[in-house]
Length: 419
Ligand SMILES: *Cc1c(COP(=O)(O)O)cnc(C)c1O
Image (cartoon, rainbow, N blue to C red; front, side):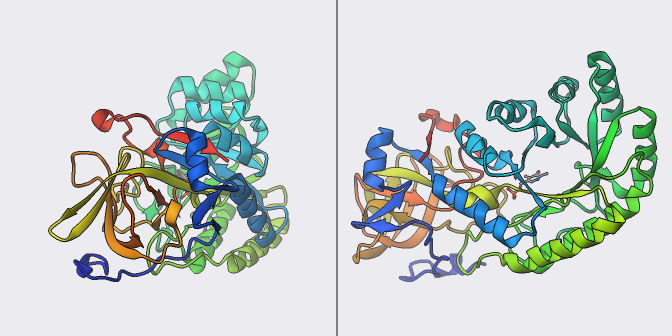
């Protein structure tokens, strides 16, 4: 049982990593340079997501500082596909990773250079593969089936099909929130099947460019990430012997996590930077044409976003305070704990228009849906709040609006703003 679950009725709950990326001014949280109540007035209604441009830029700058020059940084846009965000990110990073034809459209609309767009994902439909070839983006091939489809599209369109092979490695990313490689998986092609597949790619005349390895997600342990990167590099080096062309693209994945829950601390980038520098130095002689790429989603955007709801009602039930808001799991499934978490824990939250109020109490923030799953904060220490106040969930810039069942119970769709 988690700490939180065992503290029913207790006054104090474990504290979250301080959300110091947002300043407090005149008692209010500042997002995009504006006090929250004014931002809410500007948006015109609640609930809404707000993503802070300056924080997005700052995050990319910090990463550039920590990573060796020459390592390419891609944004995995499934973390936040809002077109304005993708456009902003396209101006900051070196490439965009998409996972559907729908995302491909948003990336190209945003002005991403097709040479630096890659398309991964299981179950790519024939039409999607054809769109990818016509768009001249790199396809991360995940199944032998895709070879024939790409070959046909390429011949029909008179455009070479650019491919990298997504490898399902023979190891896992230790300590990941979500494992996406190792063992049997629907992602990528098993490493042991690669030699044969690479021959087939050569025979089909596809433009082979390299490998994509993605072991897992939401990892806060630098050592585990370094280990996975080392093993990925070694594996790619072995597979390169079978490749029909030199490796020019080597995507070592990402998996960089952000702190969501009490007791979690920030990922230490320094060892990861040093590790990548070492890999890069080896690649210089062992795979001289290879560009090292890392692809990040939540690490780039997650901490720059907040979800803002208005408190509709304040209820007290048998001594416990409930702040009932105008949005919940229908807009923010992951904060409700229903997006892959094993044990529900609270995302960091506050009352945004009373962020530094001294009067505090233990309260739960619940959404308006008729289900006990609609819980944004379970018995948290919060500034005292009531009707009209703004409840804010931090760490909400990734896997928010697009990863939530917005039609559930028929409430209005959430608004998203980039500020
Ligand atoms: C989901 C996904 C990502 C992004 O994961 P984050 O945890 O948001 O960084 C990157 N690459 C691939 C292949 C993915 O499926």
